Length: 246
Image 1: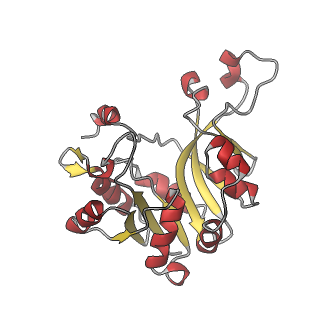
Image 2: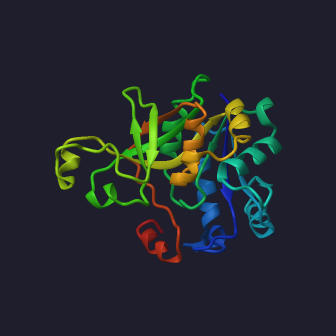
Image 3: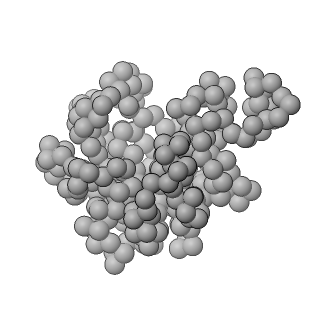
């Protein structure tokens, strides 16, 4: 199984411009993500996909593989698709794993967990973690995943799902399983080629979640349940969360 790990990285960000190049303990964020991803044995190759010359030159400078992609991609998946094509496409890779570029200390183990789901039959894979905190449960910025018995993803929502009928919200964690979605994706090569051509869907536009477009078009997403806690950096203030890692 040949798997390409792609790290989408944009310079422009309304909340944190230049985020991929920010210094974290002597290394840029994008270099730390790249080096962590390289520790995952399942990945045949790792590359950055960017639309900015500064990031492109920086990745080349630390010896990384990088592809320049269009400025007009609406999502990381679209950027991954262009980079995948430039890397050789289906003639070289069976799957592509989209790795978030704002988690400088991502645990390679989560990549390995996802890779275990990739058996040629799996169309799309992702990761979830069980929610144990009430603040997280009712936070609309935390995307929830609803799973079938076989770990197939039934739906994703910013709303708290499932709804626990007849019980007070403060006791819901005692009556149902809730999962936080971790935004890593693995796409089978032929599926990536198809979903990259899909137009935004009604559900996607409603919840602002691109994975709903794939579900709405009938693609199956399976999840691995992990204990790994993602620590992303969305704003300059979030850098304070990384003090225990550097």
